[in-house]
Image (cartoon, rainbow, N blue to C red; front, top):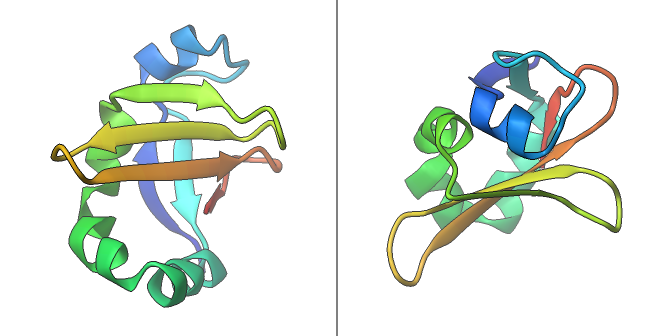
Length: 96
């Protein structure tokens, strides 16, 4: 079952000229959660609870040219960046 982890902010919607309303929900599926836990366990443990903040106020946002997904990045320290890719499949339900 997918869990809501955030919403698209008005700033991201406007900056990327997205064709969605601000406040559109972002969900994470169980398969994406397992992927993050397996491939990025330290980052997942430290930052998964901060996903809503990352979506609300990212430091950077853009469109990935290779697959058209939306990327938001929040810098938490000089050496750690958390990037979240949101796949544009249907209802923006996949956090990778």
